[in-house]
Length: 79
Image (cartoon, rainbow, N blue to C red; front, top):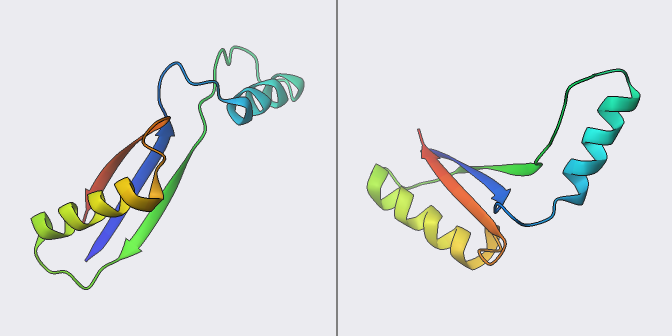
């Protein structure tokens, strides 16, 4: 079973990488980009076959290691 985790900084947390990308886009001539938020995607290949058990397992992984839940939020997709 495959799992995909999207991790993003929470609203209100400064995103210096996103700001650097926004600035670079402007210098390359891409007008009208008012904001960029940068995150990460983590893909996991799981042995678990039950979707709900897999979702719970990945959520525990996120809470323990994959996301800093103080400043980041995450979503989990199971396929």
